[in-house]
Image (cartoon, rainbow, N blue to C red):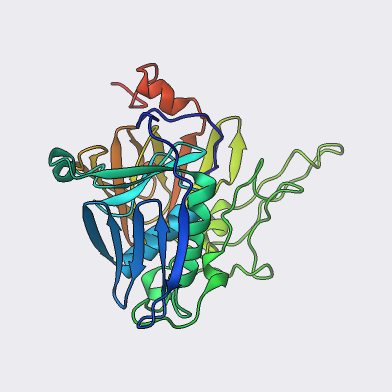
Length: 342
Ligand SMILES: [Fe+2]
């Protein structure tokens, strides 16, 4: 998604001071990994787990799942709304500031008064997260890749994979392929066709442009473009018309985060099948299962969280209204939480 500049997201009122205190801690003699501190949160990893602690609580996640989620939070710039790494920890984007939380969107933690949150300047927390995904990703592990296309993250510190974890997300200014914009993918620029899309035609549309309109008229084969994506679950801005953003992506295995929307979000399944678990954004209570096959169109409401599953690599077009005003309009009741009312 595009990083949006906006002043506030009213989901969590801004009262407490913004925390600017982060720290990269020394290397552990036993595992070789560094630990990290953001305000009152401390992050450590060992051979199998990421371990997060905060005043009054601790939590562990399998480190493969943790790194896949952290990678998306880093690459997406904290994304729209809520990025739940799992049912306990995650981030809430205020666009310029970000809340790091434990149990905030978990009914059991909330009802017991055991949830904990701190709000950071995004420019404070992001460098710490980048250092963490770099230090904790070993040489043979790519948290952006499908599980069958990478090694495992287990064990003590063993090199790094900075080439993989510093990939930049596509963010077209107008459209992929236009002069001066992000290029189409080819073998030559390092994007071969993925093993699961070898049957996708690679032809290119013929565009005959009237003289004088060379900078304005273009077309490209979106299926061919997506067949060459080297990452999964990474919506990239491929065309922009005002606030209308087309963010196609290829999906395999599971969406590494449980995304809590702060606006409606259209999903057009372009190939194969993607299944979705839909839950209440705040409580995490199950609300729906949505099975989508090629050609199916669905719209996720603004008050849910969702996690996707794709057994075979599939193509998805995510379509969003990227206006920075929407979260606040929804909070004030000025915009609906569903796109269509029947
Ligand atoms: Fe979403």
